[in-house]
Image (cartoon, rainbow, N blue to C red; front, side, top):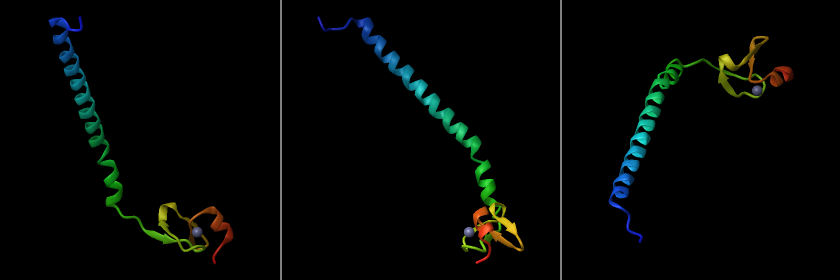
Length: 85
Ligand SMILES: [Zn+2]
């Protein structure tokens, strides 16, 4: 009594087909969302920022992230406090 009725065999592939359709739709939506977000990131990279050197430890960092103090740049407020080496 393990044999399934004919109507049951028809039912299973329909569920699988539905799952596949939903899965594909989700993947397409994700790829679409990713493509929408993509142009924002390279736009930032296309404009290279000036690199400055920390006067204390000598690490290079973007000018916008550096702290300008007394004619020199520092990487962190700690190094600004410690001053020029
Ligand atoms: Zn530093």
